[in-house]
Amino acid sequence: MVSKIPIIKQCTVSHNQQQGDLMVEDLASYLDRNKNLIFPHRHNFYHFLLFTKGGGRHSIDFETFTVAPWQIYFMAPGQIHVWQFDEDVDGFVVNFNKDYFKTLLLRPAYIDQFSFFSGLVKDEVFTVDEAERTAVVNIFERLRGNVQDTEFAQISLLYLFHVLEKQRMLPQEVEGNAYNHTLLRNFMGLIEVNFRELRLPKEYAALLYITPNHLNALCKAFLGLSAGELIRDRILLEAKRLLVIPDYAISSIAYELNFNDNSYFTKFFKKAVGKTPDEFRRSIDLINKQDGK
Image (cartoon, rainbow, N blue to C red; front, side, top):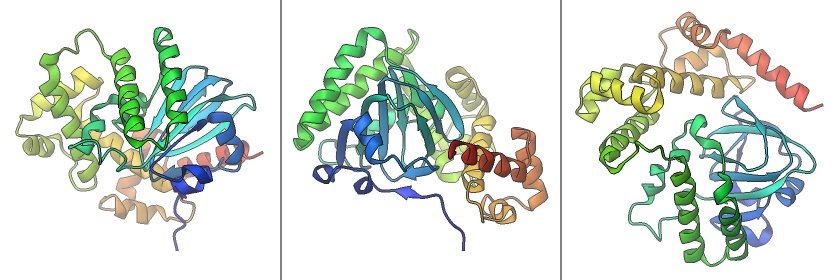
């Protein structure tokens, strides 16, 4: 039987008093209570961290970052991550369930509009602007003291998301681009649902009622990648997530990802990653053993 990547539930990492839909805590105390959670794992809730001091390493979906003060890390449900932090690290950690905003928003998927909930790791890690740091810390502190006041906490979280999103907006991201942003987010959502079956940009373009050229230009303009590269990268990410499972046969992974045969999957993976699936699996095992020393 395949041993899956552990899925951590919010109730297992929260204070007894904070087993609702939202948890806000000092990062140092959270890490002290969950000091054994140093193996690769995923959550069934949204999870984000703000570092105010300390350092270390933090990997999200196989991309590793050197931690520095005032970095913020967002993670969506299902993403694999693992950390190795210094003893003096501190800041804030927030966990909230998928349906947390259901009672406040008519459209709970509203939070998907924020770039750091895109599911793309490059959008999920950034540094808080110096001009916003005092305001951001104040919001975290108010949240920590008012977790049980659901409406206050929901509005405060949304305000925090808008503050962080505003600092990331480029001058050219004006209101006239709203349609293109919506198209791009819809494309990313379609990839998430269909990447196992649909591999060609023209298939997604048809679902979006635009031409493949329009879709490709859109992806290049906003993400610097072609539509085909985004589809490929999502397939590769899922392959990497499955390869972390030690006793999951590579042939079974190829079948799950809808490749015709194991050799085609191996060629596809090696061309993109520079390693065969088996070599990638061994390298991840080696890193995990070194981190566990």
